[in-house]
Amino acid sequence: MAKILVFVEHSNGKIKRSAFELLTAAKKSGATVTSVAVGAGSDTLSAELSKYGSSECLFVKSADFNLYNPELFTGALADVIKKTGANIVLASASGLGKDLFPRVAARLGAGIISDATELSINGEDVVVKKPVYSGKAFAKMGFEPSAIKIVLMRANQLPIAEAAGSTQSTEFSPSQVGLKTLIKEVVKGTSEKLDLTEANIIVSGGRGLKDAANFKLVTDLADVLGATAGASRAIVDAGWVSHGMQVGQTGKTVAPSLYIAIGISGAIQHLAGMSGSKVIVAINNDPNAPIFQKATYGIVGDAFEVVPKLIEEFKKVLHH
Amino acid sequence: MKIFVCIKQVPDTETKIKVAADGASIDSTSVKWVMNPYDEYAVEEAVKLREANAGAQVFVMTVGPKKRAGEVLRTAIAMGADEGVLIDSPENIEPFVTAQALAAAIKTEGGASLILTGKLAIDDNASSVGQMVAELLGIPHSTVVSKIQYTAEHITAERDIEGGAKEISQMTNPALIGANKGLNMPRYASLPGIMKAKKKVLKELDLAGLGVAAAGKTKVLSLELPADKPPAKLLQGDSSAQSAELVKLLRDEAKVL
Ligand SMILES: Cc1cc2nc3c(=O)[nH]c(=O)nc-3n(C[C@H](O)[C@H](O)[C@H](O)COP(=O)(O)OP(=O)(O)OC[C@H]3O[C@@H](n4cnc5c(N)ncnc54)[C@H](O)[C@@H]3O)c2cc1C
Image (cartoon, rainbow over all chains, first blue to last red; front, side, top):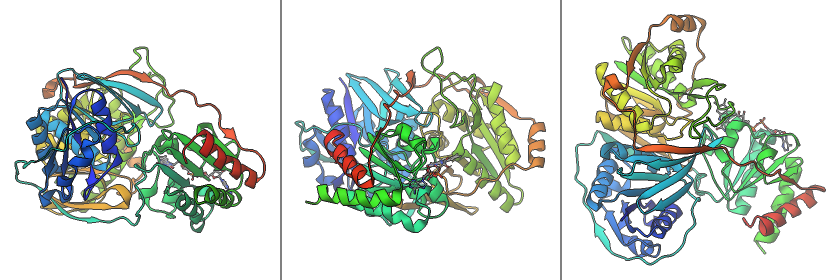
């Protein structure tokens, strides 16, 4: 019988949606599902997690865990996996997940597949699908049967459904070892919005906007939609916006429900980062722009004319 | 000071991907191979550190099939790396096998003062090898790094995380750094660099010689190409009509609002 451990990401007790997605998938397989969370607020999560089928939440409350330290977290997660005897571990393919779990896998000699977009768990058998070659192909992957199987799932890929669980909450004290890493500080970003990798709606702008000041069209539309703003590399390299906003092969990989590309040509390196979006809207004045080949809906037109009209129309339906 | 840079040869992003007869790997006959883009930042940073630290040496290493992978080492040597180590392996081995080979080879070569890699390889998109090498060598790591400061005892790294935030850590040397875009501007190879790289004798190792088994814990069951998307629905009329129609479609047809 599979024992699944779900690593729950949260900030000060606010659980990320991705954790509920993982719990739902784990619970649906019929396995026993245990959650693990660390840092401030991790002792308060079990009630909410139980609604999605978690039967116990192990937490590490020590203040050392308020900031991410790869060595410290590796020791703790390896300990928890051993202690629970979990043979399947699910975590988010977030910045933290992708940094931490390969190291955990190496410590335990476990198998790991990161950046999965589909997941099926059948007893102890786990099969995932993930984009490879910059999104130009998908690999269906499995594990050696005897291995501990670690899967890092991209956010927004799996449904959420409530299921019976238990609110049991148990403190866990990992063994401490000499650390060679000191986390000095975390410098906050400027944006209060959801990160691009977690956003449900993204509005991105490119060189078609002609000038840095015109990026306001993108942020205005994003504000109306409660969306996160993104960018092509052309305008990141031109210094209009920061690198954290770049979508694509050398930027972020995103998979929102809705991606609106304004004045972006759709170079292969940009598509590599956003072709997993459910619905893609392209606004471009060149009917031959490659972005239209990936788009669900296209408006061939001048962004400076279309976007203000679009903002008006969205306002009509979204704020009655 | 001995700097190791672990790099990978990957298909150029522009290359058309075709599935091979085995159904689980790519047909590599017409693939154009290049250095993984993030590895270029790692090589550049190593060469810059070598230039700033007299007596330092840059070793580039790759794990890959001998019949093609040496080329990526020559590209790095043309950019300014000193020595190249080619670890022969079958195609498509998993990250943990690669990491075991790299860690063993770094030990064989006398250990590192600093190890640099790219934050991920754009072919298998695993972002795993660097952290695994660090674990196997028992050294600290930081990935997705866009700035470092190196001193004799410590390395300070700025790691890019969600929301434009940065985690700043100080690690005791030796450490492993996974390079992100923004770390530097990779240089082009110079003509003398290219000449030097052509003549360079690469050191050759292989998995068996390093005591590493090629079989891993994961396997690719099949490789599929994405289904063709139906053509985009182009909205007609003037910009007002187009906008109204789009909002209606997003709400009623796509149901994403
Ligand atoms: C190794 C490597 C990695 C890369 N990584 C990335 C990456 O991660 N992300 C990324 O985005 N790019 C990346 N690139 C760059 C990529 O190849 C393109 O150069 C870039 O995406 C182009 O940005 P753009 O679409 O904004 O600009 P352009 O290609 O210049 O397109 C501008 C578009 O705006 C349209 N336009 C002009 N005026 C208007 C108007 N008034 N109204 C509406 N539309 C208008 C034009 O028709 C055109 O289609 C990478 C390149 C390399 C070599």
